[in-house]
Image 1 (cartoon, rainbow, N blue to C red):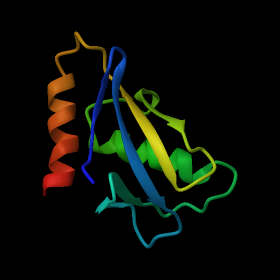
Image 2: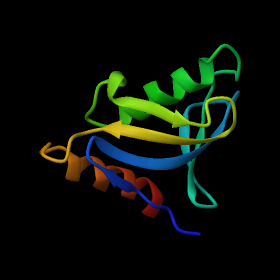
Image 3: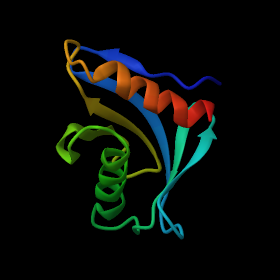
Image 4: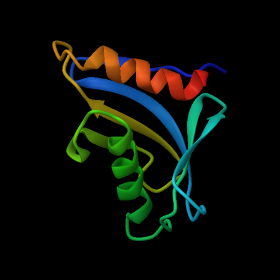
Length: 104
């Protein structure tokens, strides 16, 4: 399977697989066609989702509010939207950063 970053008018969407209650927040490579994230937060009261969004925002030149989980709120498999309009000069930088996580 191949990791895909979907282009949308309001941002970039990609799949993630979340492993909650990990020893530290980190990108752990690929899990099928999804980017695997280890998150320290537990999967209760939306804590892992919030931690996941905050972690991704800390790695990208975007505010926390620009990272949204668009599907999979209650499961480990999720889709994430990184808000960056098509006309945004940061869009290519963000795409390259995400791709670098996958390609090493």
